[in-house]
Image 1 (spheres, rainbow, N blue to C red):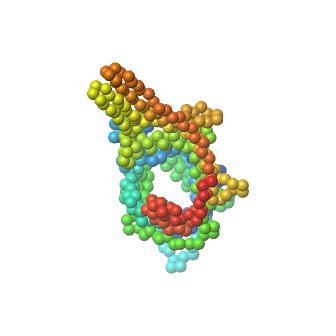
Image 2 (image 1 turned 90 degrees about the vertical axis):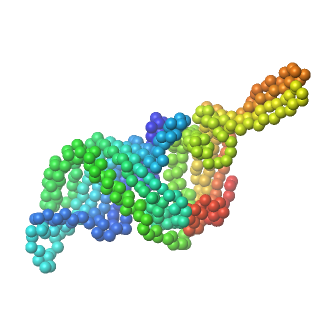
Image 3 (image 1 turned 45 degrees about the vertical axis):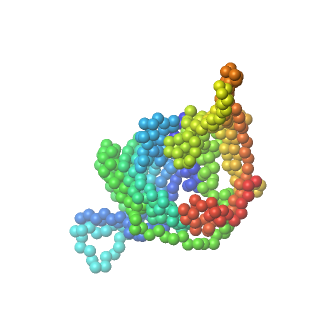
Amino acid sequence: PSSNVNYDFVINEVADRLLNSTTGIFDVPDVKSRFRLSDEDVTYTLQFDAAGVTGKLKSFQIGGLNTFNKFRALDNNFKENPTQQEIDERFDYTLTHEIGLNTLSFKASFELQFLPGIWVNVPANPTPSEVITVNFELTISELDVNAATFTLIQPELLNDVQVGQIFGPDADILGNCSGKVLDHLNISGLAISFLTLSALSLVSDENDPIDDLIAESLTLINSILLGGFESQLDTIVENGVRPFLNDQFEDLFVDPDAFCEPYTPQVYDPESFQVADALFFSSFTQILDSVIGGDPIDDNDADINSILDIMIQYFLIDSPTLDGPDIVKIDRGDYEVVEKIDFGLRSGTDYFNGVIGGLIINNFDSISSLVVNQTGSPIDPYAAQVVFEWGHHDTKPVSPLSLCFPVVLNATLNGDVVADENFCIQLDVSLDIDFELMAQIDIDRTYQLTFGELQNVACLFAILNDKELR
């Protein structure tokens, strides 16, 4: 979430890491091979009476992917410290998403070949026209996108899918295998707005007369369409963009007959995942250090304390899935375990009784530092260091984690009250944890596991070639 004033847009840094550059550009120099498409998939033909043209998409670039100024995804209307009404108003199957980008640009390269029109008598063996390459460019500024998706997921269908079928070296993470879990995916709402939309332009380094012809055509197209596009954007999005995207989602993800290619065991060198070279690990640590954790943790609505508070609220209070005592939330980080122990003795008119509990937990949200780093000199490719502080910090005022056991004692002797006590046995806790975790996780055995087997502890230990806690 990006609503908090202290939020650091680490999503931009993660985008740089995923793109392996600081340009914010996703570059596909060869569309056909990158997405394993046929010529038919990347070829578009416009046929008119006098002439026609065939265009083949060769490459494209999407720029500005590290200019996020707003990012909120997978929101089901969850509220912190919710009332019962707010709990009832949570979405069961709808997720909302909101993103904002300062700039988003598109560049595409086409190979164009002109064709004779419908009116033209074509000889039996016509001489093919010259193929020319043209490049188009479009830029949008201050783009805002708000969307709602209606999603029906059957996660149990993923139990029989192998990890390698989705994340393996030859797998497509958005392909048929991951689509097995989606029973339905539909964009139920979509709104797009922007500050400016540049005219579609031709970018050419050659002085070719055909470029002048295309440029003049683009000028005419821009003058006719650009103003109408801006004024009719809502209608275009609702009647054009949203149905188109839903059709694509249906084809990509929700095809019950789609074939899910089995994972083929392979020999890897090295045979274990290396943390030092893992793009996932570097992206994860960037998010952890800048948003979820850090030293010290910057209080925001996505830090580890907020995440723990949400998990306790949902799993232990709103929708308890574990057998155990009831838990009541007093405030953020403060809880009461509603479980009391009564005891007592009575002799005639004299008695002694007491009550212990329930347990009151204060300052549970006092985790002050959480950092994960690569470790070793030289760096151990299979190890990570975890530094964790709870209840104190050298530079940031933090209250200790407090556990309070309320005790009530009452006693009479010969009709006189000899005890009427109400006190708390309190334990304040401050933790410093610093450890290294080394794990050599076998790549091939991991990819052979199914997602159902990942829930089995024995299977998780089976993929470890070596392990050590230091």
